[in-house]
Image 1 (spheres, rainbow, N blue to C red):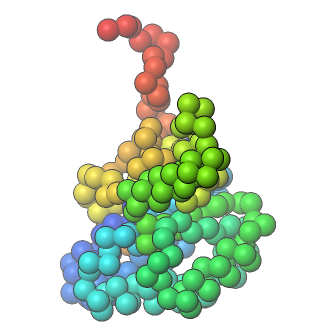
Image 2 (cartoon, rainbow, N blue to C red):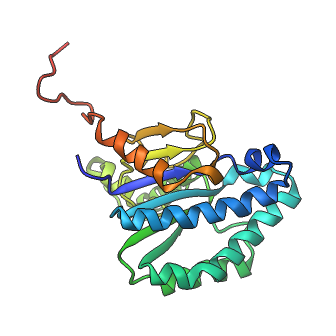
Length: 239
């Protein structure tokens, strides 16, 4: 089995990493950005085609206002400061999530980096920002209902692939490997549709401590797993 083409990461543990070091949670988030830069470069070198990262969820708005404001500012500053390096590495950047609640300045930065990187092909970096898996499916259902109302959909011909075309990023393929740092063993409302058959890999390491060697270890374990997609491989017996 070759390297998975489509990987997703729940980048968890920035705050706890900082607290263990008697630093502010903001310091942890800054360190998390540095880790993301390293992992993006590693993914390019490992010939991963698509990397989707969970940057800010629809539930993160419940955090203290000061932390939310910092995360929004950090995202805007990071996009502005890192765009040239991403372009040099042939990285295409796309966002998935709701743009409601986001400032016009942040939306402007998002649109700018998407436009400038659109022709790059070494790696597609999908940044899930103001994203929730249930929100994505709900928004898709609303669009489907509207198209049905307008006579654009025939129900008895509507299939799974048709539903997928209504998701935030139609071209985001099924996730093959989903990695979560920080020790928690859950999906936290991330890519619920796309991860239906993803291999799950959990590590206790906090995101700022996650290194290229850890990514390689996750890929190694992926290669050792059998992927049946509900069927049977050679040598399996019927129940």
